[in-house]
Amino acid sequence: MQRMRLVAVTAGLYVTWVLLTGIWYTAGKAQSEKPALSSAIQSGDIATVQRLLTEGADPDGAGEKGPTPLAIAAAFDRLEMVQLLLDGGADMNARNGAAVFAGAYCPNPEALELMLERGADPNVSTTVDRGNGASTSGYTALMRATRLGRSENVRLLLEAGASVNAVDGDGRTALHHAAAAGEVEVAAALIGAGADANARDKGGATPLHLARTAELADALLAQGADVNAATAAGWTALMSASLRGSAELVAILLVRGARVRAAGPNGWTPLHFAGAKGHVEVMKLLLAASADVNARDEAGMTPLAVSKSTGGAKLLREHGAAE
Image 1: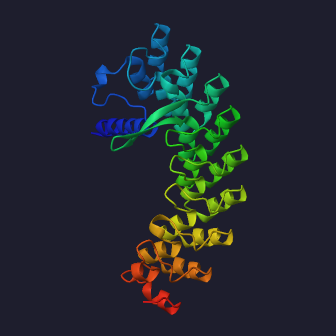
Image 2: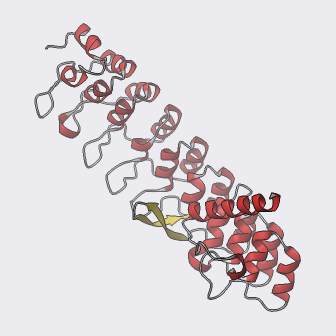
């Protein structure tokens, strides 16, 4: 029973890594069907790995599906095996840089550092599955390390020449990904390496639009992010923060000059968005910054009209909202 549990946990870790990196391995194959070298690496059997390489096993697993033997070793943080495979001539950039992605994923940066020292391409990219049939191309190892908050891996990739402003298939840079993931330390490293704080994705969103914390927004604004930048659909960072009810973020944006009366999608102002969700604390901040309590959207609706069922109506009436 204990062995069964161990096998299940090991398999779960492997599947988790495959999903995180977007590098798929044929699921459901019996253990006996897996290539011997990959199987030995996954199970941590270094003696077998040494024997197989000595006997001429292909260190790149030519003809196999899924991640390379080197990628498996890096993902499982088997540094000695990584060394053996590299000494045996393993191609670090094979299969869209699977090994580099695995190193970027691993919390221990040693495998990634070793590969980069040996000349691995820091700008490898792949296509990742986002679920529901959607995928994103151009996803780099730097973006992977960024999303996971692997600050040391980010540093190593940048020092090796990773392009800090490379864009994925959605037009997003590593800084977009850092903002969306709330990774303040990583964002600071990217900014220090020259990341563009005003880079726009295909929808016109800048990293500031994706920021979820006041600290991260402050770092972006200090780097020159445009506090009033609007997406193609008309969203500003203040509108997004107001809709989410992020009072601390709203406060920072207002202090930095966000236009409180700007109209976005359907003519809604930040006060409309906050009111519709009943975010009273955000509404107070907006009103204190001179939000127009009687602003009308494209359909003639005021913040009061969209707030009557959310609890913000009383506050709006106290500030002179017309019925």
